[in-house]
Length: 350
Image (cartoon, one colour):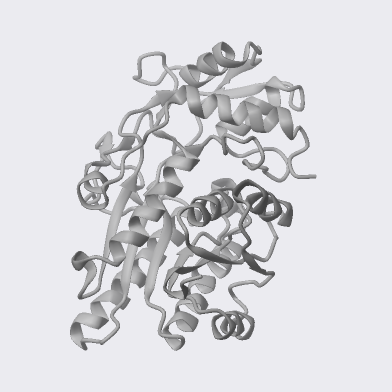
């Protein structure tokens, strides 16, 4: 295997990371995964190898462990990194902010130190639309001001700042191997691999809408709470930009490829929105789910949650223009693939 196409995937056993491993392997890359398995399962990586019929290399390592991470770089011919490792529950981040800053920000500092020591300076970072905060603009473009409003979002914004500073340092003191960095700002990933073998397997009660809907439909949870029915949207419920996880990770492949092009020849750090460019309401998600699956989703309305916006979605034009990426899958695809995963794996990976 060509070591020039060796990619380290941090958090590769997680929901998005495991789907990224599938697409990388199928695109001909050699994949090395580091994951501490705190919020993920090794079973996901076993299934990735079954789906692709290709091997990957796994290390159970926490990215905050400098020595162990450096050992991985010493053993493996890594040339690029996809960085997914991190905690991601907004509510928990408000309760345990130091846990999030230590895991997400400090973990990334250690990763960047090890990358610099190994002279591996190509990075695709898993960022988030939460960095935009409460912008009054409904469709988000990459040039909007950053203003995250919760600890999780602020960890992503801080990491983006660190990465821009690293890139700027190259401009002050030109390097033969400058940092080449893509910041990918996700909107709302849902769905699962079409095989039904890998998908989202949240610990405990889900934080996100789609796994909650599926667990209500299958009987694991009694009822979905829809927060707010009086927003200024077509049906009164919140509108968000949902993107199929496979489309999302294909955006990472496009980003890795872009870092090899003339555009990044002198280095740089660039942000890209990854979203569908349109929104779906909570009731639209529920209605589509019921139509596709034939299952009733019990729900009731609850008061709005503090800080929730009525509506926002991506402007993904820059990703199309510079990465050649756009979504291919529909909301119906997202629902069908999520339901197949849930039916095949009612207890997740357990």
